[in-house]
Length: 370
Ligand code: MRU
Image (cartoon, rainbow, N blue to C red; front, side):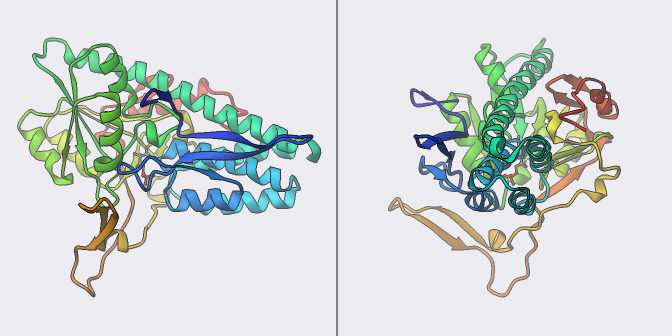
């Protein structure tokens, strides 16, 4: 994505030392300080990558997957032994539980690495991680084009702008580039469509208000931030033409696990006849899970509910407590929208009725999606 005059991905390898054996580190954009600060940090070890994923300096299911792949590359640089790689894989797998892209990427890296001699593992690891990152970019561009066709159909005969509502951040920042839910929006805007985005703030971490708003602004797409509870009202008043969300994990039956609050948007959309689309890259489909109830839902620190962080008028980052001392709080980070509430799933292979999502299995490489 273009930031200023420069093209950026959200993650990329950097040469740290040149010589007989080139060593790499991994650069990321620290998403915990956006939109107030543009900060690029470098990670030198798998442990630093685990920490960056856990602290959500990198976040969003596809980016977590790419980050885990680069984490495995850092691990193989530390030591290519099977014991070290297994330990690194376990640490990465435990960093965040819900986005299945993480497990998919770690397992793909392990399958690639364990079959080559130790001496070649490091080189293979960087190559495979780059491959996963490049694939993510291509997948999201394809999702953008398939989603664009949906938006163009919705716009036929509709006077004025097309209003898309989105929840959380499933844009450029949540992937390596382009985003999933926002890829169709960028494609529509770039094609000259009059598109506007309702951005749910997405408490408690405010990924909508801080990240989605920021990246739409960078691209010039018109948007309006609304509090999480406004969507139903907007839909009742005909102000939403469709909802597009991303996913952290989809079941073969088309159930969509995404940021907490997505389910309520889907209920409101169904009640108001508003199409509800989920943008789902193939690595986000969990082919193993039979029942969406078995998806592990991350429970995050309750301080995220009690305490709101932001920038004070003096320009410094600050945080304030908004709840009475001693209050109990709970912080489930994701929920599941049942397939019956989903109008269509936008994938890189095209748009699927939720019940037909498993048709994708015929199209994918079994070596990559076993
Ligand atoms: O907790 P986060 O910020 O990692 O959650 C992100 C989301 O819920 C996104 O909607 C999802 O990962 C899809 S990203 C393309």
